[in-house]
Length: 253
Ligand code: ATP
Image 1 (cartoon, rainbow, N blue to C red):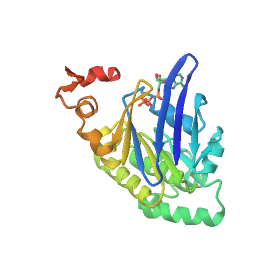
Image 2: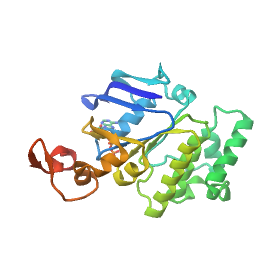
Image 3: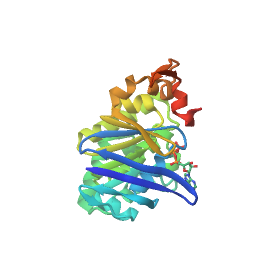
């Protein structure tokens, strides 16, 4: 459904992504895990049209994606940004309306009802300023705002960041439900354990390069992943020698 081919992107002299190749199939949850600064946000921003690629292509349903963010949304790809980025001075309802700006009034009413079913707390707080919501509620609002445009694909950037474990569980079960309802998901996460447990397929991004890929459960069982991303101490054997996984992932030291 979404194919990234030989994609490189960066900022000025910095090349943040080096020849990335990945595939997101329809109906799947695909996860990108990686340390701080690995390039995860840059990857999502490049797909969304916020960062210009230096080379490579991004195909959506077989066609090259437009490079302007509003046209990417129009094609059916919506990003839920890191840090929620809700409009603090607008109410919950107004934030949702912002997400539905491409839709007609009937679709807006239907989508809003659906979002209020997914997140009853947003209905209770519909007329409250978004800036007064808790972090978890703001994350729900950011997800709801994304859903307002009837996306085919949702890009989630670190939805668990800064949230209490119980709230993280709620957000992850909502992502699962959204996928079951037909939205394909590309999920960027530092919480590797949760992301790998949830996803169908995952890529590991290190210093702007994809270094590993596999099914979620395969990566969860991989000793290098366990050491570098799940905080486990075991050493692993690579190419005949005992190698600490941190050596494979210099970003983690
Ligand atoms: P985090 O988990 O901390 O958000 P990340 O994996 O999302 O990290 P990016 O934010 O994509 O990583 O950053 C990748 C690299 O690009 C880093 O070296 C970062 O410092 C650099 N970078 C990101 N945004 C900019 C920018 N606007 N200008 C210059 N360099 C940037």
